Image (cartoon, rainbow, N blue to C red; front, side, top):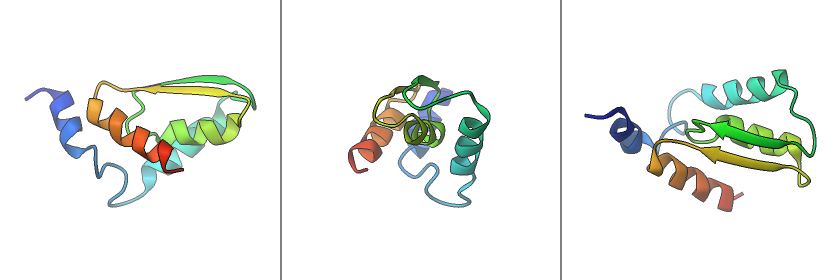
Length: 85
């Protein structure tokens, strides 16, 4: 089984069940970065968006963020989360 297939299978619940440490990791990563308001951000391997959402909060409406992932289901589920914010 390919690794991307595994990520596709867990994507719907990934980061939403069990410990919420992914969001803490994403928040800390953005905190330690040099991302500023209005920045352009590319999140490679975004998963369910833990770093992407933290970056979006930091860059504000003047910034631009793009997230990509090898798992189409991760991308689809994260897109749904963005639309629901």
